[in-house]
Image (cartoon, rainbow, N blue to C red):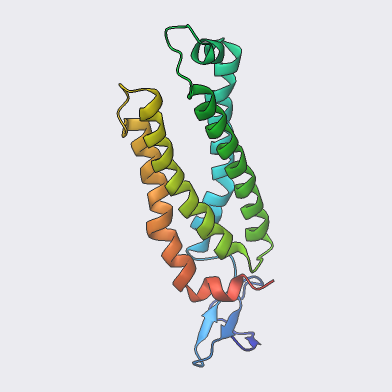
Length: 180
């Protein structure tokens, strides 16, 4: 990536959409446009979704007494790993929430770290869905490892890995946009 040039492929001029000449002499568009708009929508909506899931899933567990029933020895639902599973999920999801907020900062300020952090968050989230489903079957022996809720999370995380990770790695627009 060498120098910036002003005209952009005969289209109307947009301040954020500039062309950069790559090492082969080809003009490559930069800016938060094209497919990066879809990435941006995900970067904005995902923290909201994660926060809603945190509040809807874990708040009731602590408010309605479920946590005490699941973690108190002698109760019918007790298992020694319930506490670890609940706090592990809560901790991981909180960390992921802050990771997505950080990704929002990196995305909108076009920081060089954005593609790498995005890839790490996507891969770690995918691995966590598999790990969490496996660990849940230890605690709840009657649970299916892939219930509909887990399948939905698996597909969502898998989509990020299968579609957007290769895009982050191969897209010329990504390479010329995230340079700060």
